[in-house]
Amino acid sequence: MTTRRTRGAALVAAMAAGVAACSAPSEGGAGGSAADSVVLGVGYEPDTFSPLLGYGKDGNSKIFDGLLTRDADLALKPALAKALPEVGDDGLTYTYTLRDGVKFSDGEPLTSADVVFTYRTILDEKTNNTARSELDAVKDVRASGDDKVVFTLKYPYAPFAGRTVLPIVPEHIAGEQDPNTGSFNTEPVGTGPYVLSAWSKGEKMTFKANPNYWGGAPKVKTFTMAVIADDNVRATRLRSGDLDGAVLPPNLAATFKDDDGAKSYEARSYDFRSVTLPSAGKVTGDRAIRQALDAAVDREAMVDKILDGAGRPAYGPLPVDDPAFAKGIERQQDLDKARRILDAAGWKAGADGIRAKGGQKAAFTLLYPSGDKVRQDHALAYASDAKKAGIDVTVESATWEVIEPRMKDTAVLAGFGSTGDPDFGLYTLLHSSLAGDGFNNMARYDNPAVDEALDAGRRTQDPDRRKAAYETVQRELVKDPGYTFLTHIDHLYVLADRWDGLTTQLEPHEHGFASGPWWNIEDWQPKK
Image 1 (tube, rainbow, N blue to C red):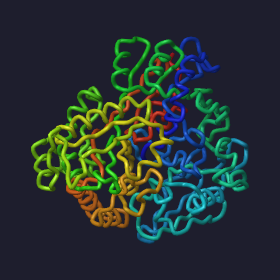
Image 2 (image 1 turned 180 degrees about the vertical axis):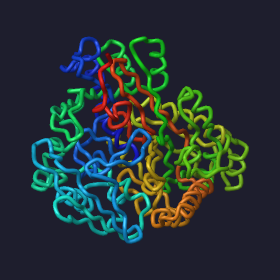
Image 3 (image 1 turned 90 degrees about the vertical axis):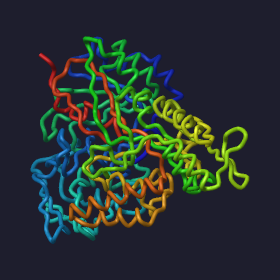
């Protein structure tokens, strides 16, 4: 999914100065906090804590658990289920047996009815969950006694087990409310290692250990997520001891390199930055313009200068080390090629160097979310490269409230990327059936060959056919780009060095809140 996680950052951008002036959260920071308390600085907060509306859908929620979860290497392992699912009927049925003795944080037992309720509510079109298409393969979900759940699929969907990391909610609470407006959205109850104990919107969220957690009571008894939209403010508060850890961009993370009391963590990710090129735009709707921009951009320079080497060039939505990456699509900046493409398409350079065709100047606006320095730098570099080819890109910052209604025909410096399977990230990014569905397919990309390949990759279990399908998608994107892919970003974190057990996973676009070295905070142990 795209930038919904940063939408929260935009909402609180105006509050950053006020947050900076606040005293440390009451739970304490590194400079004198309790040994079992942690305060972390993040750039955003969720819109909701309800899995029914999409919260925690990719796992790592501290309030909830899914039937399955992922380990440090992203391998699936049991969570609320006793074991990995039994798969039958040539991949059309998945049967899960629930773990014994699991209770929600209010003391009520988990049953198969809760699992059925969760999935059926998400699949209900009246529920405002923009990730519903991720469960498209599900034909039916039913309980078989109190401890078994059976999913029946419409078609064999190879990565289905990976979809069942989705958090399970209690029917006895959420079932009594409207899933779109009920209090459960801000007062969640789950089976996870922590309970949300306080939420001061725009400022902080406090979580307390669930003493009855089925996985064992966590050693970190309290952790607070301080919402600080401004990168510099997060770094300042971390340095002052007000925070125990923070998400930081490369230039600020580097300033802690020689700090003996801090430890830096770098996580590889599927997270990429790209420019959406809406098909409805007067200029961006022209394939020649999109092809020229793809050739004009200097991806390597962006990695070196903007990311300080903490990333890789993005030649498409999948990183170069993904098993499904289409070899041979790597490409360097080629301004001569960009100019040839525009010349052949009738875009002629004027006296000012900017091209025009039929009275239409090759000019468009590129929006990026306010307060995001890394996106701002990408946008400015992109505009500079585009101008060398004769395309005038005006960079403009805005809040997500301003960006969202404009993105149907205005370019946006966006972020996407999902781990687990190519289908998880590519379908919602590119399939024409999702054009304009919230932040899905923001460019309103419509390519029949890509749709066909995405459907083939989703509906077959044959590994070779799936690999071929996703190679087709990537090669079509080179010929007919609906986005200009720029960089894949490594995620950087700095934390006070007083806990053992911190690791990083290969991360999705969604990071900082659910991902990061705190993905397994319930397993941390105090250093001795």
